[in-house]
Amino acid sequence: DAKTTQPNSMESNEEEPVHLPCNHSTISGTDYIHWYRQLPSQGPEYVIHGLTSNVNNRMASLAIAEDRKSSTLILHRATLRDAAVYYCILRDVSDSKIIFGKGTRLHILP
Amino acid sequence: KAGVTQTPRYLIKTRGQQVTLSCSPISGHRSVSWYQQTPGQGLQFLFEYFSETQRNKGNFPGRFSGRQFSNSRSEMNVSTLELGDSALYLCASSLGEPGNTIYFGEGSWLTVV
Image 1: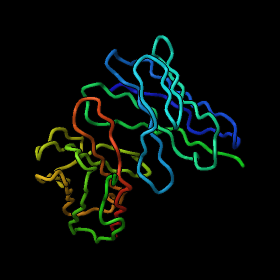
Image 2 (image 1 turned 45 degrees about the vertical axis):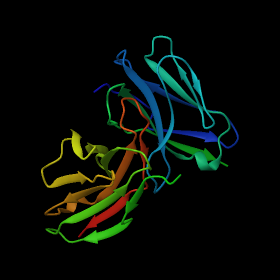
Image 3 (image 1 turned 120 degrees about the horizontal axis):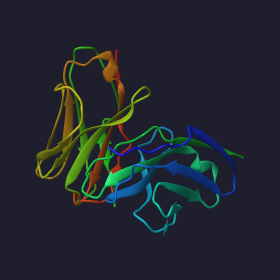
Image 4 (image 1 turned 180 degrees about the vertical axis):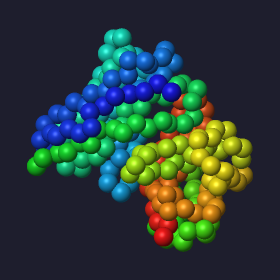
């Protein structure tokens, strides 16, 4: 399975933008980039996904490098509720399972 | 609409016992998968069911099993419990077609003593 590399932890101030990086140098042409987050004591929550183009939704934006070897999840204005573990995942278009890495623990400072 | 529902949320079992966990997927979803989360191993895929058939399987011993019913509800069973089976067990559902988004429940916390 293709792997991703994320920083173990990051800190950000409340009400500021947060950029969460992810490296995936072995990505294949049929891998989608998915982001999930897991708040304390909850199951993972879908955030966003994309293939080649940048994507936006009500939760976040996903910026994908032109060579697709890296991507960045952007939270435009962090709140305390965004404190969670964020997982960057590669998932083949035909795959029905998710292989999770260790993710990035995001701390939000008030 | 209702999300993925798991029962029970918390349970304590003794070594050697067996346990059954239940999952009700989002209405209309035909794929149900199960994951185990522990502090040491993180989130690991157990298996996936689609239309009552196991479609995908992770790397877990045969003590871990599951099934899916005609209404897409699913159960997973762990027999001969070991201390190391203490974990958060997560159920997830999707429509079941390639690329469909997978949605998770809040999990069942199992403690083996």
